[in-house]
Image (cartoon, rainbow, N blue to C red; front, side, top):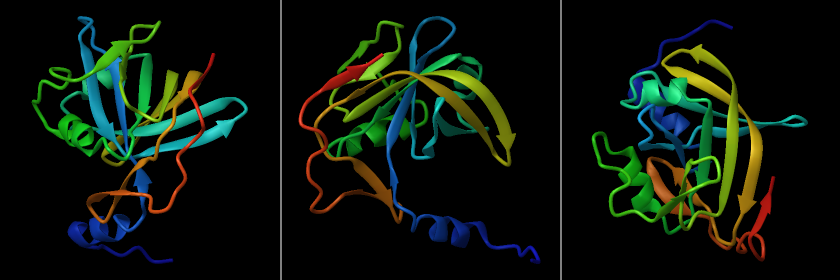
Length: 173
């Protein structure tokens, strides 16, 4: 198959037709301060061992913090958290000011109101194109009630007609 060059705006538009969930990945910087970034490039890799991945832009302001940290918390956003996604996507924002969150046992920032959380230990890093792919082993996870926030065609959306996820909150370590 011959490779073709496509205008990046058209390619972005075409890729935007794949609906994704929205997460905020959090960690602690070297000085202990909380750091977070909005991510929709989150995926399950394996159940045995339990692995997930997410992609970090090489030009991200928090690249050094996330690229070097050994643990991350993936906060899966609920349908009513589009403002949280926008907040963590804003460059230079004081991301944890006026936001409800608490530290996990490992000290990672856990955002209130999410529908799931995955605490991961980074297992490998792979640089591809303009992103760093981070593969993490799930060390613990929690599930809560709610509907997911989706991103489709450059807009936030809610899954129409979907039943609320899970009946209660469960934690697995």
